[in-house]
Length: 192
Image (spheres, rainbow, N blue to C red):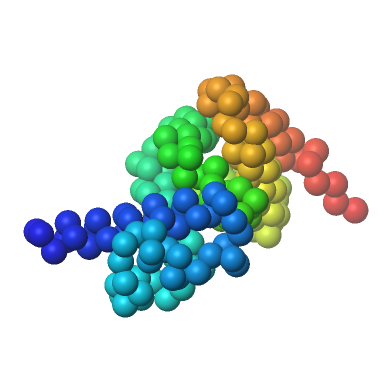
């Protein structure tokens, strides 16, 4: 038990040090040496956990995606508004971390990695009301919606997450429902 606690502590101080440095400068200017000095560990300890600073960033993002995917799986029976609210709430709960990770020094494209993970849990592909659409069109429809959600998420994060979660989720849900209604009526795609 003590070993696990030490490993968790070591990873935590490495991550915290990395995030503090990322607030001040771009990832390409952060060195393993700086992280180690700030975390008060040696380089060998860092390399037991991560290949380099980019691997550290990737693993931080992957941890978030894994946690988010678990939450989405548990809430998949809920409507989109509730699921999107859960995503926004998860991000806001760790706002300082995510403002840094998604900021100018971090990975501004990270939000685009969130919604493709949700694809296998959606019902668009199985929904009979979209019988007029081909399999490819159903996939395009999902990714059109996912990219729109990613754009809204990115703007919400960039603006400091100040807008209320329910307002953002409600507006996004209305956009999606209108898009799905158009697809359902066949007005979204005109075939020649």
